Image (cartoon, rainbow, N blue to C red; front, side, top):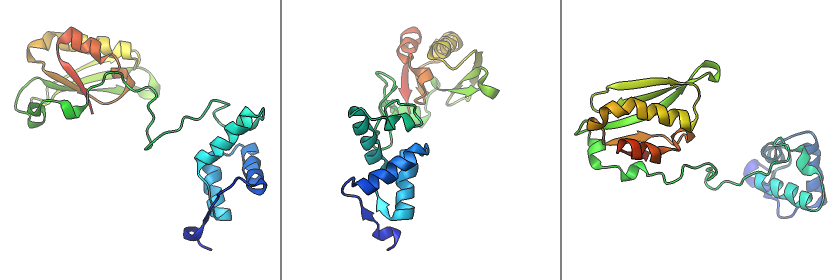
Length: 191
């Protein structure tokens, strides 16, 4: 039987749960166990099913969860590979940005990013105007939203006459985008 012919596990039979629990005891992750089951036993079982088994065991008073690398913190299921934990509130998508920004037909549309220092010691806030490539930067102690927001306002305050939009990535350091908009009068968009 080839990997293509692997059988999908339809039930958590005792033999399968024993295999899973032995590997959990060896501190294997559910993802590793899932891959091992497919490779060695031609059993197709998702890591999500293994996590469900662990949490069902915990609800019954079991201690399988103690073997997880997350040290007992619950696994957060993701849909489409993305999680909604820690998303930036009230973010406005780059899709809603004015067409002039993509056309680069005016001065005043800026892009912002951060660069982390060696060994995570400090960070650099960089802001580039899209048409002229005029660049502003400031060193901050850390990549916190507070530090990045204050640096952004300080850097762009002298240029409010040439400030229409700011585009950022989805880094949590830009979580206070509403404060930036309020202080500078420029809408912040997220890629």
